[in-house]
Length: 292
Picture 1 (cartoon, rainbow, N blue to C red):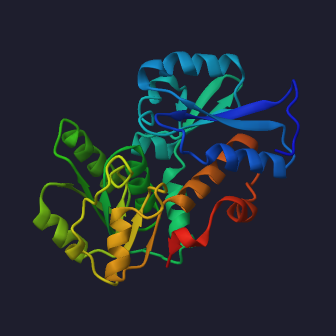
Picture 2: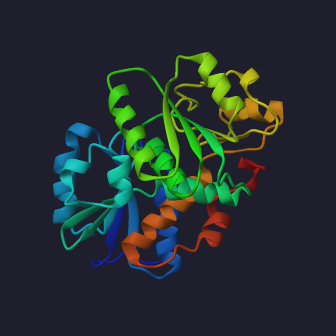
């Protein structure tokens, strides 16, 4: 860190569980340094049962703002004063801006994902996609993809207690955009295969594929060489899904650039300044993890 920490140094942070693997502290702190801003970025391992007291503490310490990761993207909402339109539609918040103690929730996951798709050289405007998962990142991606012109989204999740609620979300996006969103049971393998066969893009927006769950939700035989495959996971860089995609010959990319671009949007919301993304890429992101 080049910028000296002083008694006036402010901070932003990441809340979630776990957070020890995150490169956000390095990325944001470097961006603050590069723009000569007197802030640092920290990561705090926080579970839902400690969220309220954490938020109160951050407000008391005049925190610039914070990011949320699993499992807090919906849990934070009752503690906020205002939500952006995308957060209302997706019922997800990954960025909080503290405006004089007034807390405003945004979701930058969807913007980050769509920007990472463009960065990888792809466009699915007017196309179809299969989206695995219905958590905060998934609903944000679904919302932004619909707003950005995707024609149809097949949203697959487990048929559990929140299935009906997710069905309401799918209907809301379909009614408020020109995109048709269909909720599907992840256990229905025949439907999953058919949906992938008719789609241009497959996105894993679950945590399946991380080291704690080292497998893929999609059988390798469902993939084909002209299918774009992506995973929002960035650690490990090569998930089982992406390894299968590489074997089949699919173009693929992981979640590192989604992290970069959602972070850049958060950075702008906090500071009003553009993150120097090209420089941050050079410092913390490698092309070996991205395969076009």
